[in-house]
Image (cartoon, rainbow, N blue to C red; front, top):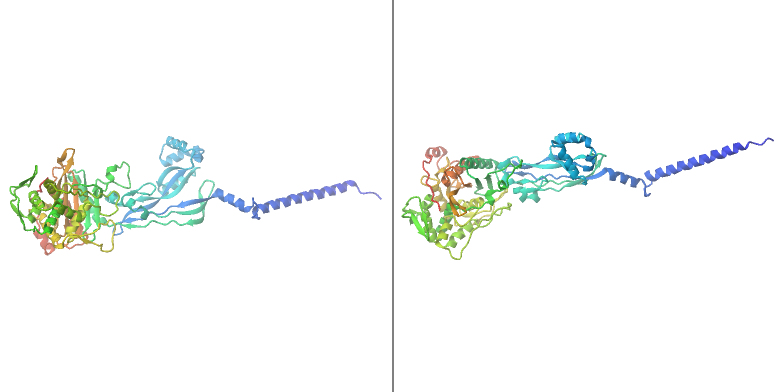
Length: 585
């Protein structure tokens, strides 16, 4: 027989060998694919690869918290947060995208050299702001340029709808939304919310294309309702600004209190500033002068001194005091009245603001009696509002009162207070001797009050103060159509380098209305008027009249005067022709 060729066996062996090798390679490939996509326990299995993929695409992002809203007592927004976008860059990436710089600087409205310098300064950093707090629309236009290394993050920016009208009270936040002044600072923890966190997927350009997981929700801050009424706040701001401008004064403040609750219904200062645009802002403009600036109150303390005298029982409103010959020597100082009033009663001493008469009253008392009255009405202590930088004033006490020190003290020199403290002190007179806490926040319940003066004594002083704004008094320009007011003028010498200056004054008026049932208390101070008028009755009293009359109408307090109807009131009231001037110390 003929044998089979040997080459056939070799070919068959090779075929099987190659097949086995190919099957082994296929099995190895299948095993490898299974190990990286199916088997979880392999050190380089699918769980590991998925984790590595997520590490490169999954990111945690902070969810910004919305800051609480600040409103007035009627819900009018005074501080709100609006969404904005801040653009930032990864410096190394942006440095490698130099061809896009011209488009970027054009969109950001900045110089090419400035961008280059900033990038080189941050070249070793992972983060650099390009522009903070852009509107989402403007930011999207730049992000749509798709420039490598340029990203955006969502934030909130504070906006103040009332602008400079409420600036000193509300305050403002910094670029990171942290309170810096005013209520924004005082209630930082209350207003600030809790930031949230979420996991997102980002592409190679760092842009979010999917929200994966919410780790924690953002919690908005709590809202605050202030005690002020924006209608009255605007009126106070307008009247004060007009007075400061007309009299070319350096500054001024107005405080308007609710006589029933102690709430601050308006608090304004001049000069003011716009919290929405603080470029070029001067530090001195930031002060809430009504609460931080201290001054000697002058003649506005005379009603408190008289109240202390009446409380002793040694004086009555009808008690006669001889002020002749119109001056009085106390130590080495001579105290003067504008004219010789002769023998007048205590009520007329207040009406005319007689320096001689009040000095004789005060020297008949112990100095501590007067000081105690001042302290009981809230002087020498802060009002408890918690406002940043609020001053407590100074109320000195002496083991032995020198006559001239006691006399000066009785008519408002040698002590200091703030505009708000003076308003609180007058609220004691207006509310029958009861002292209430002052509040910058809206309150819904009648606050607890403490009786610090006998009601009949406080009522007697309130009645005397009505005569100050009537013909013959120093505050006739505080009179108003339809309402009977009460108050006291003050004209204060300011301290200079060499003692009290002869040409620098502060003009004051403190009072309340309606006099028969007080609803509002107002204190006005205008610092260093330079138009030629500087008496409190000339400068501050007209502000009181305009502010009070319009505020009472807005609050729908019916016009009345000694029980008469409004038409009778209008017929009875005539514009004052002459203003009596209070003496200066």
